[in-house]
Image (cartoon, rainbow, N blue to C red; front, side):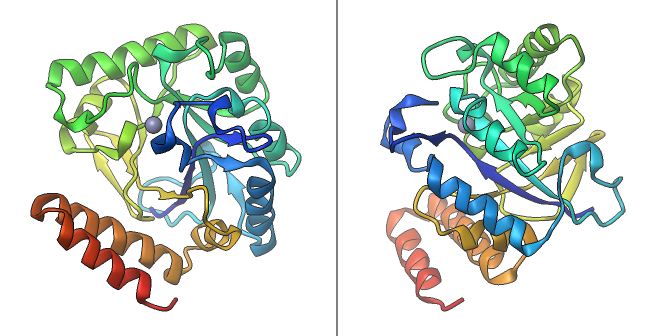
Length: 263
Ligand SMILES: [Zn+2]
């Protein structure tokens, strides 16, 4: 099964990046201005790829060409303006919630979460505490992050929640196994790929990330699986992973090589 999943975070009004989600410049580079996000959605609509939700994607073993729009962290902007902008196009999103932040400044309230579900959006877990390095946790800690966040959301929404995304992109097979044990059947990582895999019954999806200063053509490119966009992000991601093992200068060289390659 292949699915083109795109990962966004917050979408802010008037360039107020501190208004929703986690604070700080490290988080802000993943947030889009409302007017930019609007253009990204228009670019996806123009290429004509159907945008759907996880329920509309085919079964494992089939090719699925639906584009999935996902949003991480649980910021207040999911309710407004993101859900409104999606619904204006007849689309629904996948909203992944850091449950320990529900109702705190910059994050969704319980009432807003119930409203998003009522409006047809998919609500999933993004862990309880958003650990800095999810894959470095012990199995007992992982189990706690998944099972407690799933229990909180299921209780709040009145139905069993079975989807999740991995905070910070720190995925490992143990992270997947722990998610499966907590009853998660669909898990989104940050690996830029359309390929899916299965870990103990849980389908693992990659995602292409959109950051603040990326042009709308990137969203359209990811939605259609355009190789010049998907390949470039995938190459950067692999270079980054290698560099983490080798040290910083190798990463910077590899990054430069990728950036200089014409699409
Ligand atoms: Zn996150």
